Image 1 (cartoon, rainbow, N blue to C red):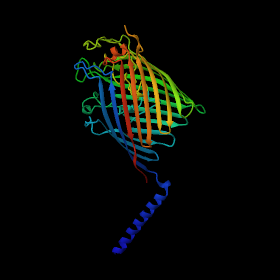
Image 2 (tube, rainbow, N blue to C red):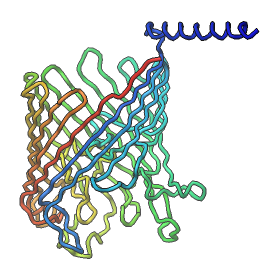
Image 3 (cartoon, rainbow, N blue to C red):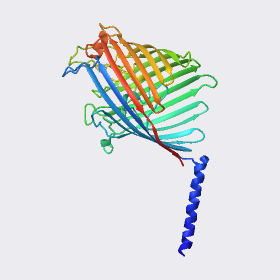
Image 4 (tube, one colour):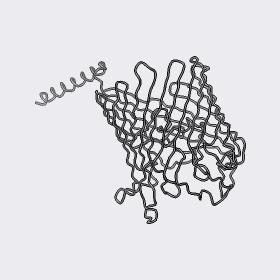
Length: 449
């Protein structure tokens, strides 16, 4: 009796073993893919000159620090479904960091054979040249969004619709007021369309965004909480043919902006335009030339250093363009001295950035580049020249193996009196920044089943 019960069990085990062995030798039956990887980055910076003045204490004119970022990456894929998760820890060496471990990305994406898809979760968004929407990875923490994204991709067309709604954890039962959250906005709706012209090396993108920003102060009767909406619309062109690439973009920003200090809304009317030409005579070197214009506020007040009456003049309309969720270090100098930190009185005089650069590949594993930036404000300022300064960015990268790379950079900023008064950094005519990033990103495990 016992033997009769064991025989079918043994037969099932043998059948499963045979099926497993067959699956191992037949890749066509393996529709599920699972992989694990890590991404480890060590980033260091050394700065001298150009540091902001502390109104309470005069700082030393230099700074240096090391940052560490660790990411654990998990990917799953089968026909019609993708899932992706990234756990991230970032901290300054010698500290525990504000958060020990956080979810940087975590999403699921469902696709149909007709080209339709739906994606939900936390996503690192990147569109076009990342001038308006990008992960801003140089900032180490990087930017991701909690979204629902639906769209269509096929026959040269891409259409994406994005919806986001953010809430503060302590307000989920009492109200919809959003303050000090992880994301810099309350709501966001975006439509992006891209078309690749058939048989012609031209790509065209159109973008529309509606961003809801939280204004007011919780519990205040004089400045009641409200959500104010800001719109951005524009487009991006990319022409690439053999040795020539031409890029151009234009964006308009209207609606409302919210003052970060007073938490009050103002009308907004700003714009930006850019153009860039890249020439590659061969695979070993090339040149770039371009110009960016970002509009600025009128009547920017330039107070004396330490003046407690800064920014008391109210502007009815905000004309300073804001790049929103951009990878800013790619465009206005690698250290982004203008949009990573505010001007002294909270307003912006805009920015003009004319640049020329050269890049080369002396060996298969090495990349070199040098870029000169002429920087100026976009609006007139009483008693000051428009020129902010001149910046030189030097960068080098070396790929040791497919998963180990080192990038280093050095920036010289020759500032003017205008820069000093607007940024009120230490009175150094030549600011210097040096940085490096070591990336180690091996794939730990990958399987099909």
